[in-house]
Image (cartoon, rainbow over all chains, first blue to last red; front, side, top):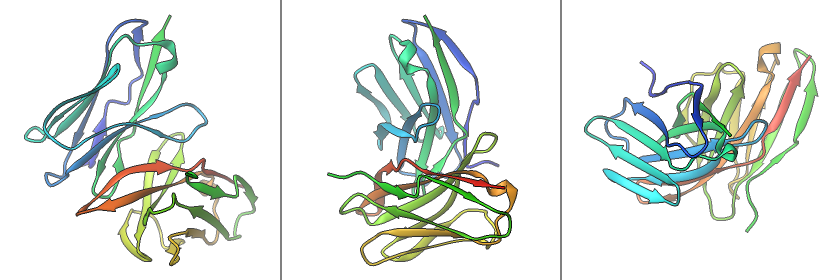
Length: 107
Length: 115
């Protein structure tokens, strides 16, 4: 079983819509969870971190964590074409990444 | 504050050769992780170093090795290069607080091509 799983996509949403990205993990003792965005040809950049159950909002981004169900999600509201990228979920303690979900926002 | 610096940015090597990649973390960060990224495999975890000790290791053959120096700079070595080692190699540094690492920040990567 993979330690961190994401839907590989691609996920396509129209501009202005909500994009929903999901991630499940296998290690129940995981305490730190991160979402990264990676544009083609670039290195990953941190979008959000979440450590506690519930929602965490930062601008158009909301991370949701449910430790009992072992999933973490990322919602992008009012999606923009500039949000088109691959989104990577990372579960730490040892920074294992999911395969990433490729998001395309169509104008 | 300077970011994570990886050198060199690009490398071309021949099969059978060995290569050493360098990573200088953000000042104050003592944890350095290395990843291999290929189009079909995503980000694959190689290993993590903390305070000069390897703390975690991924599922890569022994040809892949690393080390960390007292100033937290890290090097990764790949011996007997194979064509399949062509990839983007990324390092990420993070600060260790309490029992867990905080957010990790990535360098620009080293693009290795094996011919």
